Every structure is written in C-alpha cells, then in structure tokens.
Image (cartoon, rainbow, N blue to C red; front, side, top):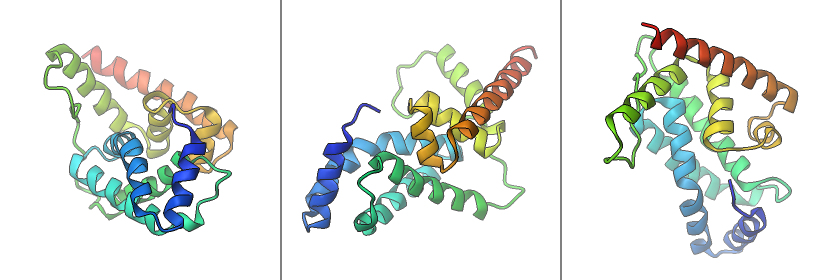
Length: 180
C-alpha cells in the first residue's frame, strides 16, 4: 500500500479533535482494499460490504484508542478482520461458501480471465482461514511480512511459515483443478 501513514495519523488526530470530515479521506483511501480483502475472506459480496462498513464505524468510534506508532491500515484491517471472523462464526456449519467471486469493477474483463479468477477464488476458499488471510495480505494488498505480522498479531516467522504452507496448498489445489 503506497499511502503515507503520517498523513493518516494527521487525519486521525483531526477526527479525535472533532473534525468529522477528516475521516472521509481515510474511508476513501482504504474502503476498496479492505472490502476486497473482506470479499475474498468471506466469499460473499454482501457480507463483505457489511463487514467493511461495520469495521469503519467501529474504527471511527474508537479512533482515540489508535496507537499512532502503528500503521493505520494495520489497525483498521484488524477491526475489519474481526468483523469477518464474526460473520464466519455466525454461519451455519452446513452453509456452503460460494465458489467464485467475480471482480467487482471488471465488466470488460475477458472470459478467460474471469475463468482464471473464478478458479483462483475457489482455490482460495479451500484454504484455511489463516492461510487465505496471509495470501490475501501478501499478494493482493502487497503488505510486507512485518506489516502482515502487525495486522494479524503473529510473529514474522509465523507469517512466513503460513505463507509458505498456503502457497504450497494453493498450488496443489490449482494443479488438481486444472488437471481434471
């Protein structure tokens, strides 16, 4: 993510000091990447939208507790992630997860690309929650290992281990799917 955390901190401080409008640039900046992560974690557009919106509301309500030594994205990601985990816990065990999630802004995308995306999404949904999360944070949000560790609350070594295992599992799933 190519955003300046110092700018985020200034906006947070302005919000805490009573400038409600200062939260709007944060929403504009982070809504899309957080929504995309939520959609891929949950596999459901409506649940992802609700989780993202609930995450922003909770973040706004708790801005005074934001530690300015931390990256704002990592902090709000943890909030949205918790919202997603709550949705997953609330699901009935027998409710199937959707196998594909098309890109939200791609009406002109070629059929082949959509098919590939559907295969990858279906494969992602077969990973464990922990594996799917590190893949999404590393490859779709392009966070560093340290940033992923901060966002997930696990050591960098654990991030690397999960990422390695997730890549191996993802490759196996895709290989199995393609060879059918």
